[in-house]
Image (spheres, rainbow over the protein chains, first blue to last red):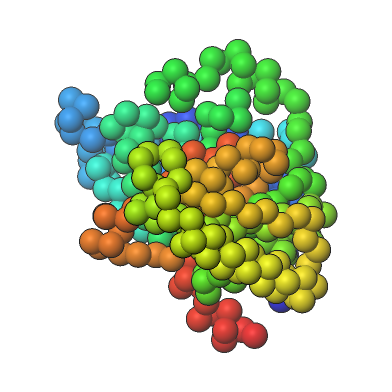
Length: 158
Length: 177
């Protein structure tokens, strides 16, 4: 049996533009006539960065993060539409700082709520310590997702 | 490391300008004959059919460490090695037959011996594939910490997107059909 057409969830984070993941998800959606859903996980900065004021538990901070994530989502939608794709729905989640499991769980929750057939993620997001964190999110999602997960790496393609 | 991660802004901008389509492409199905790999096979076939892509099937016969007499060289136990090779060839034949039996078209079957993750990445580069599809056994805890995970290693080093199919899906697939 074929899983297509299905819902495809493209997961972005607020740090960088993940072009390979976006292109792959978009191509996949258009060639298989699937719905493309977009998810942005906004996260506060971890305390070791020295900004204790960047705590998502403070409402103003959460609001700011939400605004920033909305801008990123809109940019992504614009880019996808420019390249000839369509976005069925946008999702926005705020994650606690330092919580890679929390972030992964947010991704999985959206995937399960929407009953998506495929999750697409990039790996470019962060590097150094933050990359290790994002890598943790990716591994966690790959390990626990109820559907196939496609990981598109950024750095080699460009 | 950082240099390879960070692309110059100009380059990315130029790349983004051109709307490049990745489909149709070559899809590499890396299989080890497990249930997860069989599920991955059906997904790969599905994607290949829906995107008009070529499907290549690959199996890497894992060479146990005892057959590496020193790093990078195959050891002296020729008989054991040949037996392993024969077994893994048989497995590849079976798996590609399974794909064909399910109605898929196999553009090529590739057999390698050695370290599984390295060989898959090398093969993907050689064939110039646009997508690698593989199963994930989902080892947990200590086994995962010691053995690591082949799919993680492939994700980290692959030149192209990697689709990982996990075993949790098997029950759902069984229920569905």
